[in-house]
Length: 395
Image (cartoon, rainbow, N blue to C red; front, top):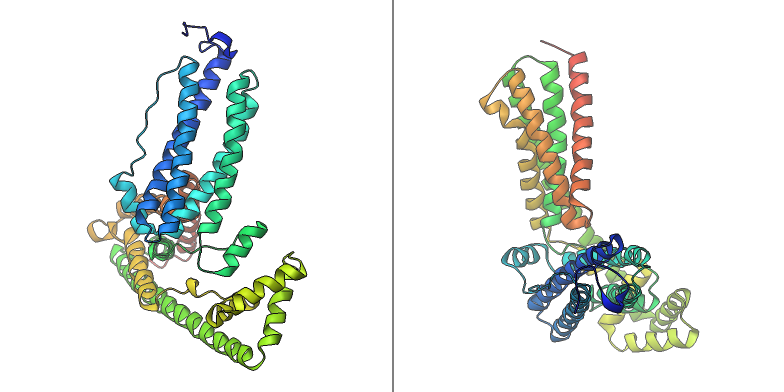
């Protein structure tokens, strides 16, 4: 039984500085494990594939086991009893459905890496509590393996992903798997461009109506430009992919032995032995379509998964750019003069911060750091264009 200020043989007193530090580190680690388990449970719910579903459940159970171990240690040190529910919340389910599995996996992988780093810092701070120190060391090793497992789950249908999971030497780009990324960056572009136009015109002319019309025209032009650009870019990427795939298919049909030798060499360059490369190539070549996709991926760096629907990309880019562009214009619909300029600047800065924070959903960066970065960019853009407008003042 633990009395106040007494931890029996554990070596740390809950009321001492070291004891409070240990309890704080243990509680923080427990919260991270509960959050991770909840995320894995969500991903398991969303998986139609039984194998992937089972893997996510196992990862969730592992995180729950970690949380139980941290909670038991907290209790042993005389801290409060910890209980946590790992059932996904409605808000988390909505986020998962919106972002898609790939984006959630990317965020989880980043979280696992950050957790491993935090574990390392906690280990250094718990030298005075050997049992907590050893607990962190054991769990830290398991967390590192979680990051490797997540990497193998990103793209289970392509040979390249399975091979890079073995090599563990490279990390490949992952798409968000939805229109959300395009929408966020569209808002970002529209907001930045039109805010610069409004700021510059506000400095150049005295008429609020001129600023309003300039902002509306800039918003429309930006939306149409981004929409058409996104459509053509997506369509061109698909056309290039189809053309290169047709060329590769023709090469395989004309000289399959040469293409197999080429794939073997590519695998050898990755670090496999000659025998390993030959065996993998022979296994892949048994399926003509898989062989074709693998050659296109390994030799040309092409992946069919990277191509979004041109219509969806275009609509997402145009609408989101228009939404971002109209934000700094809104105050001029209801106000005029210096008050409209001040209101536009305030709304524009708030929108910049919000967009920056939203970008963290895709980049997995800290939301406040991303928001602050965008706000500073907005201030710089608006300041420069306003001063330029003042210098070119036309009445």
